[in-house]
Length: 178
Image: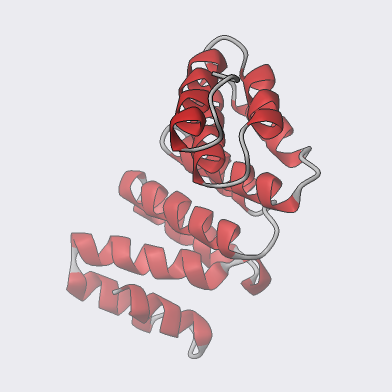
């Protein structure tokens, strides 16, 4: 593969190798991806698959690796991927982890996914968590997703819940989700 010229074929093969290697040694595979695959969609996709599967196998190790990355983009995307993967098996743990992601698109996307998945499994717990989040921690994104989750169950009940929230941004987010 290393003898192939730069391009989509080479990057695609490197991606495939990294994903296969990650099953045996995700730390080494992730490090290799960062060193060998140029920045771009193949690199991001490889890291996403590695971190997702790693999180499902050993969430603590994947989270530690993600938070230790020096490149802010790699760190934030890896943390978001870990939170999203963890939400499929332990939404409460994912909710605790997602608040560690620095403010920005990666955190907002992770908050949406974590809240959505948690609301599917335990709407009341997801609601309580979203309402307790500080505004600076992405409360509006989480409350929006709870509103949407409640609306999937019952639009009338979701509207009643949203109207009970304090007037202002919180209520607006709840109503926006409905």
